[in-house]
Length: 225
Image (tube, rainbow, N blue to C red):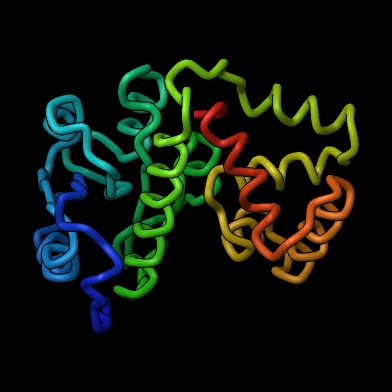
């Protein structure tokens, strides 16, 4: 993992990241990358990770797909089924020479899935993006009083209104913080095809401005968590 030059103005050391991995080498590299910009909590156990999530309510969880006492997928299922923990952004990552199942992770509700080998810059960008979205949604007025809607409900509304089924699914993925590259990899299509879908969605929803679609999707994201 390559470590980029860090910009101390981008992140906040008061933001807490829970790292769960049993790979000592990977844990060391991630600690070196993140400790100047975030408060890092670290464990090599899924069971302890769940306890630490309840205790510390981290701003993001970064979890190895394969841990000694369970899998990152099991942690993710536990998280998404818990009313207290489910809003926390969750990034899965694979280790070199270990199997990766991005489709499974995204289907279970991961906010991102980094497949080894990934760079320090890729990790930092993913973390910063997910924490920023999480804080934006969390700080929205009446967030905790907002009526909850499932992804299926949002998609159904969109399908019945203006979007095709595929476009509605892509809108849901954008709401979960997935980039065009993430969506392309997940759906096994080209980035250009994803960008064409994004253009069509923007047009059908009569949105304007470079970030209008992302802002619109973020409006749904809080309800989908």
